[in-house]
Image (tube, rainbow, N blue to C red):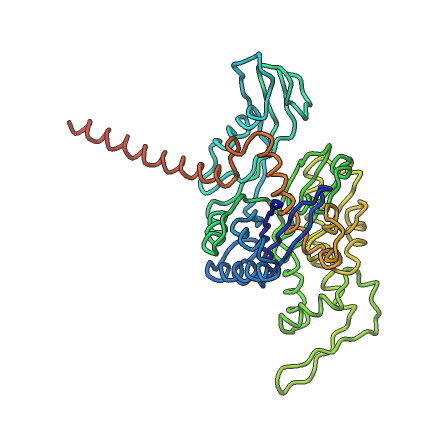
Length: 432
């Protein structure tokens, strides 16, 4: 039986579950998918535990119903996406002094150096989610991307470290666990989306991934094949819907339908005399809304989001080196003329990213070729990359991200209890 990976995208508007396998050509085949409305998540953060659990169960049940019994029992664990305003990133350098100089640098040395980063002291309430090596330095020789096989005493690396709120990450893992699934690993959502929509050439040339979700807009900047900068903007498609609701004085569900069916990011592309009629509340007249006015409301919020994206690109220090420009994905990428607005505001070439880069040609390909599925499909791809890495060095030698997070929590608890014991000893000594 082929190996199967499950990706669980816990978003603000939807929770989607994807089951995938890899064919003999190295392409991913999505065997089944299911999705449910996300009822307990706001801006990437779990606000209602019980409602989130129900939504996860509903998405998983839909997925199980759509596949045959051969794979059904394997939906017991998943790679889970994490996002939200609490996500931050920083740069740090680590060092490892090797004792056995006769042996070449191996994957175990790289893992030991990476594991050491998880021991960094973090501010209260924060923890390290992911440690990503950018480049290695061996005995002061810089710019090494593949250090395995080299000889050297002093192994250093520049790391991109992603951190998040302890409570927010714990709540996500608790919801998934109570829904009956094991969390294989927590994966930053823009990194998952990047796996699905970006090519290796784009990452090498320099590219910005912008994933416009319901609650947040996630950014990942790549250059020289390595992730260089990440950021989360606390605005997304739901912010636009709320603006339409307030600006047109209509119900939220009507605002969402208006945005999807008639919305545009460029008012100049809408006809001046085009009017949409919205049914009024009981006993009230229908409301007439100008499509151009609707586009003006959408454009104002979308311009604000793009300006914040542009600020993060400038902040990365790589704006003039991004040959690949911007790739926009996520549900917000389906908005008409969003590509043109991105190009106008940022001055960078832009394309819409579809999650078909690594998918096999199947009958379901058209159904999956939507930017709203980029994160879920990317989580499946991330799972197979994780399996490949484990296969190279043996599963027992690899620690998953969730295990490292748990170890950080245990370390904090241990330190707390040890400090209490030491205080107790000092009190007794003083009394004696």
